[in-house]
Amino acid sequence: ARAMGLPGEQMSGTDLASNLMAEIAELGVESLSETVAALARSGDQLTVTTDAGTHSARSVIVASGAKLKRLGIPGEAEFEYKGVSQCADCDGPMYKDEDVVVVGGGDSALQEALVLANFCKRVHLVHRGAKFRARQHLVDAVAARDNIRPQWNTAAEEIIGAEMVKKVRVRNIGDGKTTEIPCAGFFAYVGLEPVSAYLPAEIERNAGGFVVTDATLQTKLPGVFAAGAVRAGYGGMLTDAVAE
Image (cartoon, one colour):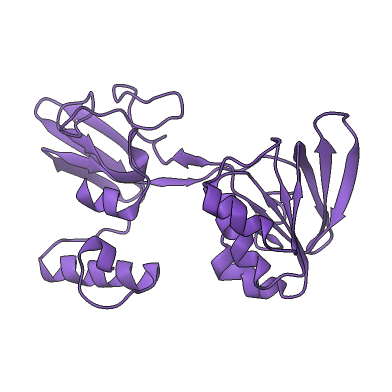
């Protein structure tokens, strides 16, 4: 909170969001709990279509953010909330004294592996490369934890279980050999994908699907702007999103 220039002590993301929602309500902002399906321009008006109806506006700010990518491997969808998770802070205590698998080699993967190491017996850190892409202080912190076990040049192929996750099958990229890692939890941190599929084709996206804007944060569709994690060139920090 202090990093954003807000008063008070550090707070959780949930508390910060709740406080911001209360503040904008006091300012007279109307919040609609609807899912946007489409956006289109007609003359000087923009029409936002949702699952509850349509809304007209002269300007629209797209701030729908991004979500963690899925690996798309067998078992990932089937065992969601049954051992497959995307939040180490939320679910780490559930795996106290258990083994878990974390997939990824960037900042997020190493940060979450360090969180899980505080609860878990072993954290198997599966990475396709021969070295991590994360910042050096995170690499050093992971190396200092005896219960984090890197698995280099390795890809996760399948999550196996019954009612809950039991093990993960992985493949060595070099020799093709497969092995199974017994575990109770599975966490994948392999990048972000923007929540932008609902936007029209006139709005330019880069190769990753992130919305392209000019220096004023306006998209190729006049009157439509983008800010935060949905936008190409976003700095990656909450403070960057707030500044935009």
